[in-house]
Structures are given as C-alpha cells and as structure tokens.
Picture (tube, rainbow, N blue to C red):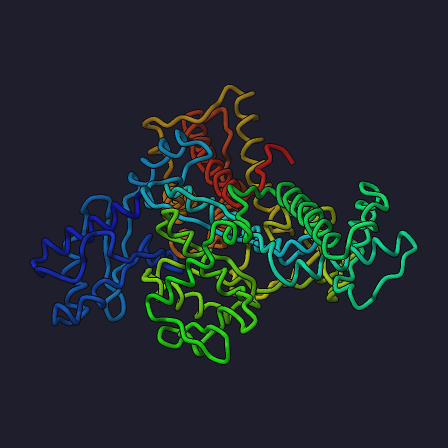
Length: 552
C-alpha cells in the first residue's frame, strides 16, 4: 500500500536523523492521515508531537529535521512543517501513476490486502430471539455486521459470521403459549388471553400453519407436551423465516449456534463450576452470584436463581467461553442500543475466566426511525408495532436499505428517509455512487466502439491535470482506507470514501474530455484512470453488499 511506503519513508527519516531509540517499534506505528484541505498535501503526520516527550525535544525541531530528510525521499516529493509540529507530505505524481496498473490487475478486488493475515475473527450479529420475524432494527445490525465481516476478510482475516439463537427460557415458553392459544381459538376451543404474550399477526399465521399440518391432534396431548411440540415447531418456523429474510438481504451466516447446544454439552454447568473453582462465585439467599464488581462491573450478578434455574447471563458466559475455546483470537459482538449496559458484565466474566477481555469487542448500533414527507412514520402491516426486514426490502429494495443503514456511523441514531430511498436519481446518495460506476462502464464501452481502450504503459505520464492526480490518489488510498475501516470497525468510512471518489470522478468527467480520437494516447491514459476508479467503486460496493450495475 502507498500509505505503508510513506510510513516506511518517514520511519527511515527518523532513524537517519539520529534520534536514536523511540517508542516506535516500526513503521506501522506511525500514524498518517489525509489532510482535510487538499492544498496541505497528500498525507500528514503528528509524529513529531508524539515523540517530543520521549526525545525531550521541541516538536517543531523534530518536525523540521524530519521534513528536511523527507524531501525527495522514496515516494515523497516534499514535506513541510505546519503549526506546532505537523508534517504535511506531498507524494510524487509518478508514484500515483504506478498504482494504476496494480488497480487494473486486481479488478474488483483492488483494495484487498493482508494487513490481518493470520488472524481468526468471529463476528456475531443480529442474533434475534426466535420469537418472530426480523425487524428493521435487525436490518441495520445485519447490514453493519455483514459489511464489517466483509471488510475484515478483505484485509486477510479468517472471518466467521455467527448467529446466536436463544432457544431456551421464558421467551420460548411465552411464544409457545401464544401460538397455542391462537391454535385453540381456530378450533373453537376456549383460550386464555393472558397467555397471548406475543400479539402480532404473525402468531396467527404460525398457528394456522400448525393447524394445517397437525389438524386437531394436539388437543389430545396434555398441556406440557402440547406446548413442547408447539415450541419445537415454531422455533424452526421462525428460524427458517429469519434465515430466508437475511439471505434475501444478502446476509448468510457460517453458523447458527443454539443456546440449547450449550446445555446439551454441559457447557453451562461446567462454566459455573469453573468460576466457582476460581473463587468468583458466592451464595446469597439461595442464589449463586458472580463477583463481577471485582472486575469492571458496577454490581454483582445472579448466575443461578434460588429455585435452581440458570440466568441468561450464565449461558452467555458459557457461550463466549466456547467462542474462545474454538480458537478465535478476536470475538466481535454487534448489539442493539438497548444492550449497552450489558457490556461491563460480559467483559468482567471474560476476565474472571482468565481470558483477555480486550479480545472481546462489543459494538453498539443505534436505533432507526423512518420518515416520509418529512414526518416520522410506521410502515408495519404485519407486526403492529415494528417494521419487518422483509417489508423494508419490498418497500425500498435491499441495495438502498443496506446503503442507508451503512452511510452513518453506528454510534448515531438513523432517520431513514423513505422518499429519498425510493428516489431513482442522483439525489439519492446510493444511486449517485452506482451511477458513477455505470457511467464508467458506459464510457469504456463507448471508447471500445471507437477503437480506444485503457493503456497502462508509459503514456500515463500524460495524466498531469490536478483532477487526474486527485483521482489517482483516491485509487492509491483505497487499500489503506479498507485497512483503516476494518481497524476502526467503521464500514461507513468506505461509503464516505466512495462518495468523495464519485464526486471527484464526476468533476473530472465534466471538465475533461476522456474519449478523443484525435488524442488517442491521452484518451487511453484517461481510460486507464477511469478503469481504476471503476475497480475501486466495484470493490467498495461489493464489501458493503451492494450491487455495482454496468448500466442504469
């Protein structure tokens, strides 16, 4: 990656300055970024300010010494000191041109790199209770988790996508009762409204399907057995529906891990025993408590109730222990906003088990609201109080819903503009991106019809216009951007990067003539640049799980 070459050049300059040993272990420890103002250079670093204390020197003195060493070194054309010690770096134009053949050869996988090679990462996301269809809130979790997993894989990690199924406990009992009561109503039997905890129309659908398959045979079972049968049927029915919705949404999991697997294998009891052996359990009023305040939590937590029933927290500890037992070096959980308070206890439990809690990353994704004609609305037809993922996909389409979910940081609430999502013009930010890709494809076809094609030879030196240099830098930066987005766990960075790239391309296209039979060499060079930009857009949309159409 070009960014790595710049880092290595800065590191060599640091050593050449004779500053001796520093806290830096190597070039990868050097932080660089793209200045917000383009006239400040291609990259900048605050390295001098970070090293001032350990080197016992003024940051500007360090910066000036480094800048002098950087002039003309490697890919660097010039380096200037700004403010208290920032170093703004300008890269040689030839260096950007050298990237274009690489980008062309990589095709839609330009930007893929090996920065995470050798790491095993599990990403668990969505993991909705098997009590009904997935809501639109789960859609944001699904888009975020799937995009993050794709980015990490593009950076060389061995990534496993996992869905955790809570198929044990009170919510399953309540689900079975709800379906049972609707089933009884359909047979003209007396039902108990208090047992209908789940009120959505989908419960009636499940009951009707059960009646079609089993007839009135369940009336002849005792209540406990009947509810057991209904629970088993309904869980499978819900999971099938959830999997189908997710696959239509472009999300496929490597494993659906069931809570019942933990109990069947004795993992829950074994985890409790291990915590007891380590001295992290105490008894109070017949219940078993975890001493989570000894770690990062604000209060101790019940693991087994006085009547002997384990809590969800205990099975969650067992599940996360199982994740690390399977050899994952990093475990990433993606949760909804209502689970924020659960983070300290999970971190505490990992520490109590003797695991490194830093290897468990819990990311919170904020809520979604919908607006239409400027007014907040509810779209649900089937669920009564929430929007289903399937309804959203039918209403606005999978591509655009994924894009809208991903274009904002996970830390902010999202107001989903239905009118804008349905707009099939450049006002819609997704169509703006897709149109840039389609325009380039059209341009390349048009050029081919006139006997022109991209050329990655010496004529790239003809690319001297500032707008061309800007695009070349974007192409060169994409692998670094992919790495940065993965490291920060922020897929929206890819959306932002591509949006800026599309804007730069549209400016380039409108201001400069690309296909010109009277200037075939210049046309071929510009077509090569266009082809490289197309590959960035195709790769970026791909990791977001969004299509890159050739025509629009």
